[in-house]
Length: 298
Image 1 (cartoon, helix red, strand yellow):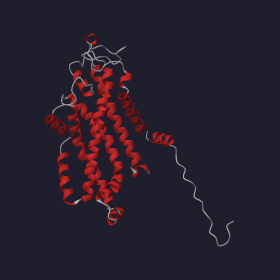
Image 2: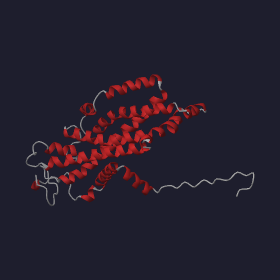
Image 3: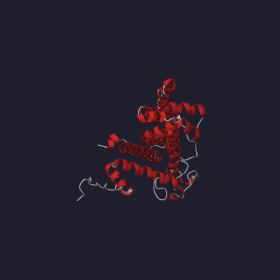
Image 4: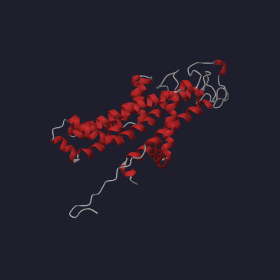
């Protein structure tokens, strides 16, 4: 019993934090498709990182004794017209796909983040001019703009990354700007201005952290789009060049001429591209469900 005149003391129960592995399992049960997408992404990263250990064949070494060998031991997915192991080139091609996809998605998302937040924060004429420039870029389909840029710069891995990065910038900038406009009107941003904080501090400390959820979702989906664009450009002969192992190049080499005599040359690279894009899209959808508070509360 508490003494008379004294208010009863209410002790707050300590907050119990869920272990990370249990939280991971809970999210995996809630989002099974996202978990499957994450599994594909992890498997792809594992293949790219340990390609030298997984396979003993050289992806660029020609072996004219084994040209167009049907699937079987030791060439489990067969060989191409130059005697190169298809499975080995698919495994090493994951390196090319991830390098181009992650690099283009990272730079496209980061540049879009900077432009989107700056456009929302400063507003006025700067916002008007920048958004009209974004409209011009978004008027062209991704593949058309990428083709135009590669045709100007020339083929090659670096130019492909630039060609894929540029179309991503306006898409990310638009999404980030729409979220940053709402954050700009919140009172704590006005309070930060009244306290004399610099524009850079307000943007970096108060606005950027609050738009990270849509930014991360856009960045994850961009990787799948970049992998598909890289494969498309390589298939058209305007992307990664031989003898670099790339899934689009493998399709180019076997899709038409050897469609009947050696169909495995086109089937397996196509499966690899489809799985990679499918995995990143599923992972991006699950990430949206986890990070979006409206969807998370349902």
